[in-house]
Length: 326
Ligand SMILES: NC(=O)c1ccc[n+]([C@@H]2O[C@H](COP(=O)([O-])OP(=O)(O)OC[C@H]3O[C@@H](n4cnc5c(N)ncnc54)[C@H](OP(=O)(O)O)[C@@H]3O)[C@@H](O)[C@H]2O)c1
Image 1 (tube, rainbow, N blue to C red):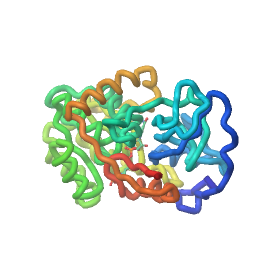
Image 2: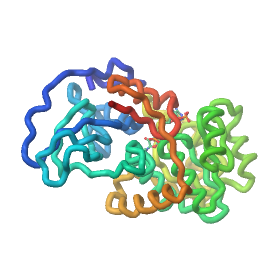
Image 3: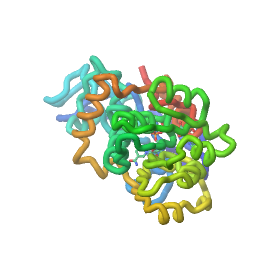
Image 4: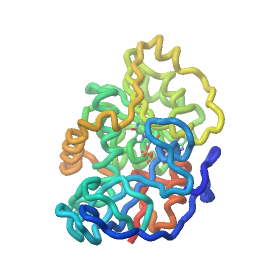
């Protein structure tokens, strides 16, 4: 990262530099990153403010979730040709301790899926739905940011629980995908809806039982006005607010939460790190038996990383946004 953004980041906040990887030491491997994840949470890392994880430093490489190939090894546990996942620098080659990496099997699973449906976004969807929303059979579940990496999985997990699922997304094409490919019962385009609040009221005459919030802002206000008594909200993300330079002052949803006895819980997926094994087991089972489908938007080329990241804020992705490097 070359500088901190104010408001919406731009390509000028990033810089590509050439450096040496250094020599390989015992228990280390030389890696060639293959699929690099770009994620909305990274916007928070660009700020110099206290959060649940440290900020990125100006002038230092950006780090994130990466699937990489082992090129050389001085470790007993990994050999050249192995594919691993780790928190690695955005680089064309890098050196990492083998103990910080997890080997993944890419014979039957697309490598990028370990950064999506079978990775952090999948786990986020799993815990938000299963631990916070807890939909009952027939409940109405609304998902904002529904066509993204987390939202697509959250909606399908709610369907597996026999809920009725309504997705909110930013294009007609995304809404079509949600219904035709991912089994959502209904989908609303928040960019063309004249009144999301009324459209939701029409689709949910008995109210919304669960809301998985990826976006916040006006979309969340529209959902809040339609919540049923004892609804549950999994507060997962607030992407509509990440680039604000001033605090958002909207219509307060709190009276709805009070008068309808709503439970709202914010969460960070790492709260559940001791249960990731359980999530992977269920996600893998559902993925293998075809109940959980997935989609990736893949941009090719290391130099396209900033473009892919910035594209998240324009909604150019459906499913998980990845950058592939050959
Ligand atoms: N709590 C956690 O531990 C955790 C973990 C992972 C992710 N998250 C959060 O979950 C959310 C989704 O993450 P993701 O990785 O799945 O990203 P994503 O949904 O794959 O990508 C971001 C999407 O957000 C939508 N968006 C962008 N700006 C928006 C705006 N102003 N208003 C409404 N929608 C907007 C865009 O879709 P449209 O075309 O529909 O606008 C875009 O495609 C993010 O808020 C992220 O920070 C939280």
